[in-house]
Image 1 (cartoon, rainbow, N blue to C red):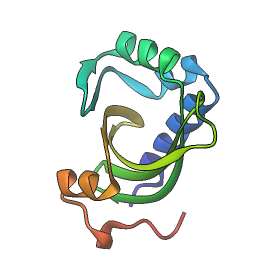
Image 2 (spheres, one colour):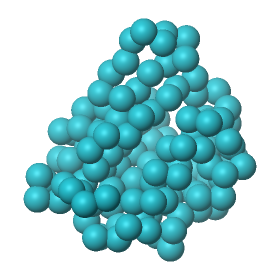
Image 3 (cartoon, rainbow, N blue to C red):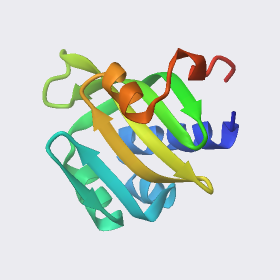
Length: 126
């Protein structure tokens, strides 16, 4: 397990949730890939635009990690609907302490299936 990869993903979450776009960009690669069920984008400009308009808070929960891929179970809350939240799963790829890809899935199970991670990849010692 790489603590560095997990720390990078946690720093990414902190920056997003604090609306600290500059830090978010610093922990992301220049050619970061972003995708969800609605589409995909690439690059820091796309990340900046998404983060500035996302209206979302993602609180990380359980994490699964193997070979540079980290799947995070997240509580997602829209700022416009603070009393409502949903559990989603997001797959991150981390290379050299930078997030190179973020793929959001509707459920943790879908993220695990897409990455072929399983319960044996659950991070238990942070």
